[in-house]
Amino acid sequence: MRNVWRAVAAFVMAASGAFGGGAAGPGSSTTAPATGFGWPLQPKPAVLRGFEPPPQPWAAGHRGVDLSATVGQPVLAAGAGTVSFSGVIAGRGVLAIQHADGRRTTYEPVTDRDPKGTVESRGDRLGSVEAGTHCGSQPCLHWGLLVGPDEYRDPLKLVEVRRVRLLPLG
View 1 (cartoon, rainbow, N blue to C red):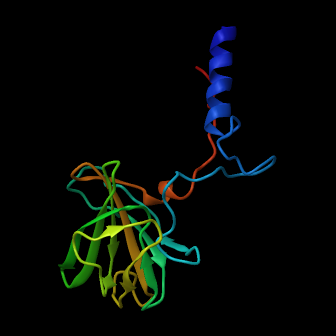
View 2 (cartoon, one colour):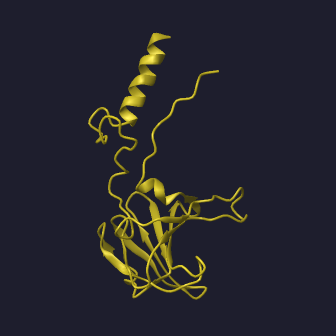
């Protein structure tokens, strides 16, 4: 049993950055975000609507997050990669970046978009937020994250790491 607790303690310390992982310090409630990714808007935007995965792939849900923005605000590459799509879908400018690790981030509505094939570094300007009605009367950027061909994930996990919490056994 002692070895089980040692393994659990080692996992918790490693996950929290205690072994050089960049923890924010004693008493901090956050750790360093996933390496290589940052916010697609600067300064850090407010989250207007979070990720709401659908119960089934075909069901309703919110397959990304809505970030507070202003019309004309620069949209930045959240991570390094290549623009895999740049075009208009349902009247909205959409841009997608394929990252080397197999993930793909999406951004909409975006105008003045970089063309397909453009190699981007984290923080490069991809285009500008365009006016739209996705968030009602308030401008926003819908930011998405896909793994594989169609598995949507919460893009906030690229930039915000939540504390690990252990649940009681049994």
